[in-house]
Image (cartoon, rainbow, N blue to C red; front, side, top):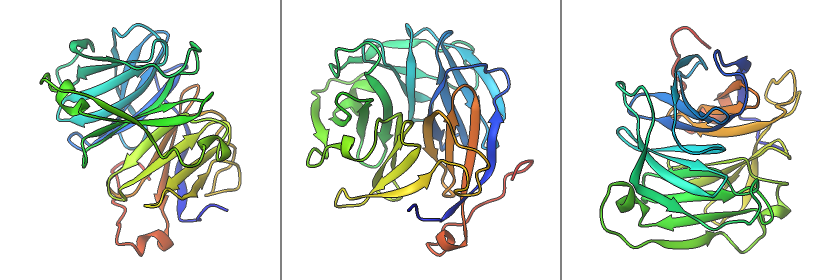
Length: 270
């Protein structure tokens, strides 16, 4: 049973201007906005915390964009599942077209399948690590150190290892559609589309069910049918995007507020 510490305040809100293929999600603490990606055609979408689309930017990154994560200031990393390629990219208030930084590119061998590669990605600001999630076959999370220097255009050597390989993640969930390293908890969180669950791992890599994305849980009126992106706000809010173009926001309830997290109201939305 999930810890009933959250309630949904924005449910299945359609993202205006996005028809399908929303994926990935990251919170930018500089702009206090969210960023997602879309494929076919490739786009970067900026959202406010209410789920309102602020802008949709064309992006030149091949095809099958699946993940995006904010690194610092206007620097992001963007991943394509097809080819398992990661790019650095700059996005700021003046950006009209998102272009890959050719010197900030990394290809990772995860899976021979063309549609079961990088499905999730998260930057750990505290420890300067990049996490990548392979969707399934096998379901696993990789930890890359040294990538912080690469995305800043500095000489580096990369170190890659499997994150938490003591217990197969496939025992926990059918797949992984997104990950988010929550630095306030110093903990990994995993979103599974097939299982409709969000799990948090404690300091001993033990998972517990954080959110159950099905009707009747956390106030949901219907199942979240195809969740594809996960991010956390500084006030403890949990943000989820789901195909084809849906947005969800969950906020901590009173039981969670005992930790000292205060949910700040957002003008114009719950």
